[in-house]
Length: 190
Image (cartoon, rainbow, N blue to C red; front, side, top):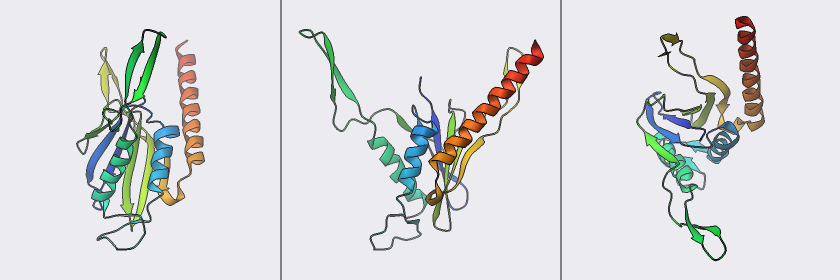
């Protein structure tokens, strides 16, 4: 089963542009790390391209497809063929086949099975990233209503300050807190 994530891109007016859905490896150690490292390559987000050698995006509507293209290119698919002589299933990379793995959803899409949400915006020409453990809306199951849960921030700040180690530490802290809360609840029901 995959660890699903959403990457949400917003424009300068805090309006969502598009949502990138990742089917698997959406956790902070994979997608969060890759996303932070990719976004750190950009010198700035501009309004009108400047003809120099800086790596830039011409607004968030330019940064979003650059990011999506980067992640979609990383999807690799293979032909699998059984060799009856050796009894081995051989795999050969299908060059240029990038189907699956990364999908685009409409702005505002949520509750897609995501466990992580990454929000990307721009402030004063700098890329801002907020990495979260996904919350959930209120729902009812077997006549019991469960309250909505807010996203929990793992890391937040400008990507030039991205700290993978800090994000991992906060994620571990949140997991330990949730485990302790669950244990306390179990003790109350006994």
